[in-house]
Amino acid sequence: MIAAFAMNCGIFVWPLALLAAAIIVLSARAAHILLAAARRTEDRATPWLDGILFCGAFSALLGILGQAVIIYHSFEQVRSAGIHVPFPAATAIAETFAATIFGLVNLSVAAPIWFGMRAYSRNIGLRRAGASARFRERADVQPATAPHDPASGA
Image (cartoon, rainbow, N blue to C red; front, side, top):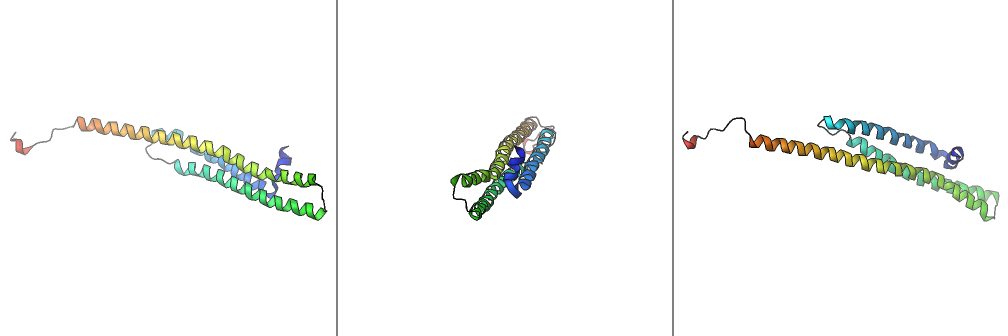
């Protein structure tokens, strides 16, 4: 079944599979960076997170382009065979959706991963900002040395 699905994608199966692998690799790398981010002060995960969404969106566009190309080639085959029965034409059109489905599946996997990791990244940033604000408040309330005021005469 997977082999038939891959055949229906035509030449677009390899770029779509490569983008699916890129989504997996970028997601794993971003998860690793985010889990270690609580110990660091800099935010290094944002480029990885944006790469996940880019690969998902590019997969969807490539799938739609694949469908358009495969529809064209399917109609060329139907026209050259001289088939006037609607069933082969309908089958050809149904098979062209494989590339679009593959691209949209990539996007539907990448988008929730991106959304979840982005929310987690913001949560880490808010916790970090809240901790530094509380630290600054404590430092302002309890100064290390009292300032000397020459106008008081003391």
